[in-house]
Image: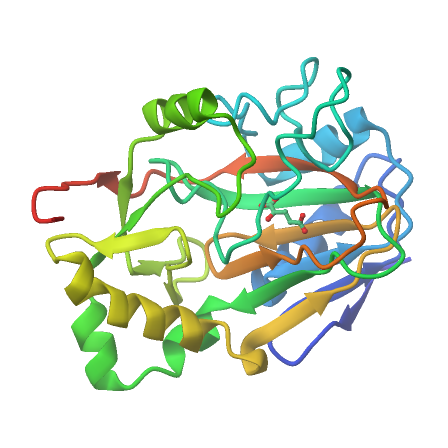
Length: 288
Ligand SMILES: O=C(O)CCC(=O)C(=O)O
């Protein structure tokens, strides 16, 4: 039976029905999934009771997987392709390092020189209410800018930092994170390598624009983030256990909402598909 697609919002996203990811994906189905991924930016597969190995195997259809060397604290000890997004305490009872992951608008691994192509996030335990994830369509956001603003930002680079808004990490691990992930400058406008469409590439990990002072940069950063995350461009995902959500980081940005009762478990696992080389280690000369 051919797979079925159901749109999730005006701006982006589609639910894919008719695939059981416990089975290897047939080539014809894979081609339909890949075409839907490029067309909709976010894909949802509900009710997927898959193992970690099946999660990794399906993810590999999209490309080479990141082993998360730049986020060593968050990856699974035996499956480095899996990043934990969890509020489960550590074995010694101390709080999880990744309980605040994603709580600012971002595109995955934008602070590296090979930002992610895609991410595949599986919900294992989700709170009964809250803890949704928001996605925005960065192609629509770019297209709806004025020609003058498009001209202004073409050629500019945003400096992306790896720090989380609220990491909960010790000062020692914050320092290690900064050592592993020096700030990287990425173009504000990127061309999607498969669709050829231009997309805005900005989020709350951008602290400054390269070659400009923070005071000069901030109003433009604020405008672009506010513009790109207008409700009109957004899909809000309400998690159910056994959801697998896949997004194209080259043309979307996302935000995890922390609005849930922390006494409820929220445990998700993510694979990350490596993208093509982009950006350069930031020149911080002008930053004062
Ligand atoms: O926890 C979520 O809803 C999203 C996590 C996230 O932002 C990420 O994995 O990049």
